[in-house]
Image (cartoon, rainbow, N blue to C red):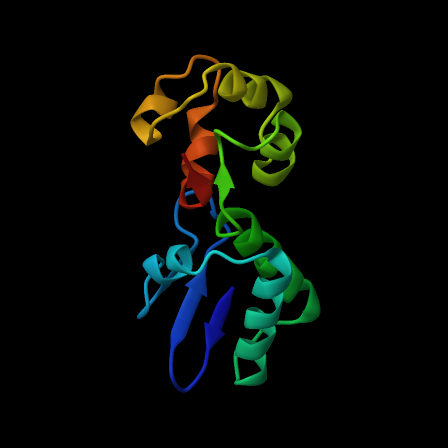
Length: 130
């Protein structure tokens, strides 16, 4: 996808697991603004209203992605197993391993938890709280 407007250019690639969006603003701006999927939909629709080029299906796809990767934070030491699974789209086994390993001090400690798919964790790392 390519969003363009007079003020900024943002390219969203289909390989979202490695490089979501590159722009003059950078992805750090996304991770500082963790909001819900619905909030992201409003942000993307605002971009379109200002000249970004996206159809309804693309708006939904982009909003879903941004809500997943840059959505509301999840505290791994407080969230239920189901919330970890649902919010972060982790498997039941991943969520169970996280709950069993509590308390988890930080990302380095999480990386050492056996049975957790670290590739999935890398995708949602901006949302993790300890």
